[in-house]
Length: 401
Picture 1: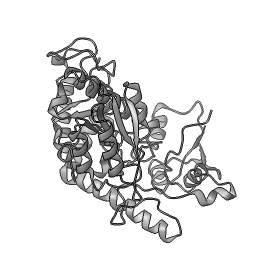
Picture 2: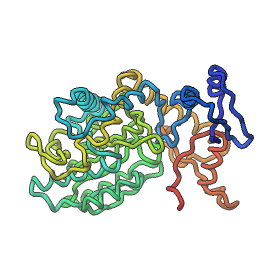
Picture 3: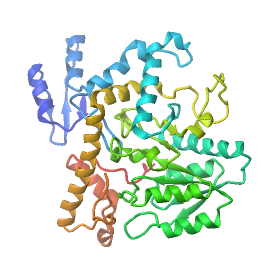
Picture 4: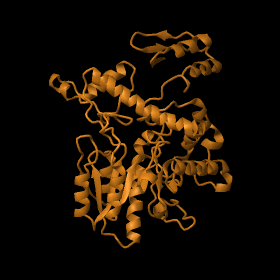
């Protein structure tokens, strides 16, 4: 058998410890020979060489974490892996503790009052959040509020989600630093004051900056009767540093596969639980089959009440292992690393497209690659070349078929 593997010293050491020789090819493949004398124990020894504490989990999401074996092994335990999603709760007390702990911890970390763990992805969480906002206005007899302001610096899923939830999207321009253009935002709030439902803001933005007027932006939306949906996909730059619920946001989704360690893509599914302030809590997704405690059946976004519950032990273990101090260090290091890389690349001649008023970035930044176009080099080519040197490249676009 042949395998493509980025050979490293740890892998070689494990081979030596287990007295296993593999054939190394020049193209990065390794060869392993098996025949009728190979025993099950031999196969187990070989599989050990490819353990999760040695090899990379492919296609990590942004702000990747160490997917420690002690976080991942529990999801293979039969009592967690084999339980039915509709089993009576008294037969799933372990899962109930995980749900309760995570909801409590996420509320503490974000400043929100209530959480739903039902959404199966970030975009799924966005959709659940927008349905909650729509349900809130309908309950108040303000169904005419159907305008959603979305800055051009927001994630691409935001306008798609708003459209799916029957909102009309109105874009908001950016200033030279990549911030929301407050003048343009104010003008559109005035123009659509009676129809304004919400603003969907990505913070920090995809431009790689913290919005310097985020409190003023939230206040402006509230002044005109709207709600603030804050996309929490970039929460890794905020965890234990600031809380969306404190600076004016009403509702957010949070990607557990980004900030809270669940492997994504080739490593497993995502999860996008949503947190809300108390006035929106009645409009969170209810049980998909049987309403409980007065829950609504509308707004449901998953076939199971707690979504992909079997991977929640990963996030539970990660938060318990890290603690408040560890989560804060992770956020600080993400910001520090991004700014270090930006400075190094800038010194090498690359242009950083956006910086804040202090000349700094958040946990990510954008490099201007347009100068390469005249020689036929696209950003996809740069991403592929990064992988040749063992660096995890950002996703530039979806797969070609």
